[in-house]
Image (cartoon, rainbow, N blue to C red; front, side, top):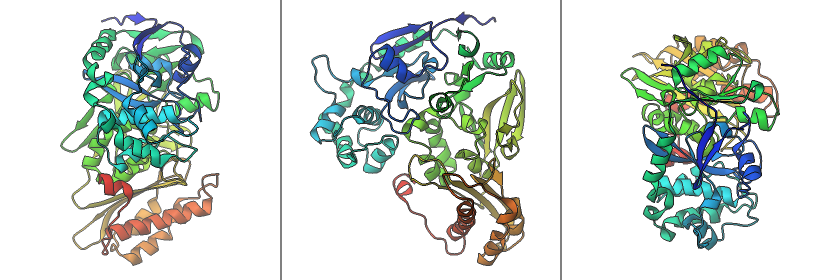
Length: 493
């Protein structure tokens, strides 16, 4: 059937339906709200998705269900909002000027000081309250990882979060009480048409479905694919790059599927970190800490595992972990699909095994063996919401004699791509899993890596960290059976 084309973006902004035919491919939601709609409660702080001052809620449909999530308006493109409901802080107060329960809790606990960050905190706490009316301290801290308060008002803000339910009734909240009405409005916007607006570098396209996406990309192989825009957004806001035309894919339900099969887990390339979290920790609990330290809540709500892999960054959080698990990348061009081991997908810095017009369709992750030892460690300057200096993944299989019969060790931040430490693996394989073997294997790190020095870490530091992470992995899985305990695993593990 021939695909019909629509030349407008349609979405709900608070209580108003918006239809635009003049959207620039790289226009951000923040600029639209502040400059076009004069909704200036949404602030610009960092313009890179780190500070949370621009936080809004975006409701989107999946399998007919409406879910609201906190997102960073500064790096979210307007073109990705077709069929969504955008909620800003201006929508919270009542028509009579009464405060929303989240706002009232912030007032009652004196949680606002200079006030610049307050609207972002309010929106993040609003999103948390709808999903979890009685959060504990750890859950509150996790929800606020992506919000910074320069006045150091965190203790009062946490008290506000704890007291929201005492102030308001969730069942009477507009976004809860009117869920059915808003769902019907958004369903009415789904017309199975391709959206195409603009020309040349300023063109944006939203394919009608995944087959249409394959066709559009084949015909526009130089276009930039945008899923969560947590990386691509910075190409615009920080580097001022011309990246159009853009093909938006976050609305494609076919790319948001999660399949828990007999032999492994399959994640569609458009599955966000947040949506993947339950399945990930169910099958790979060793990834709990890493997953909870990928960006902040807004980044996890927007960012996708497929995008993290497709971009090929040497410091991406998920590739080392996926290499350690033996994951595969399912690639598609037109109607042709092929599968490649994820470790082979990364060729060299800035180059991946993906031809023009080809895209990542899914990530296939086999389950661990019953006797496999597995661990992943992220080292960064800050605990929360920071880019890795080094990320190491370790998987070791032992035979009945306690000897290593298989070893996969992968690192990010140690080379121009995520890379396996094959010399270290060879030094381990066949040897007894003990301290002596570990010390001999550590000497092989210099054969695998010659890391770079940059502002995140020096080459010497990176090499030392990599060696020490192998020691740590051994101590946590060896004869001493040391128990790891940190605030994330204490709360969620």
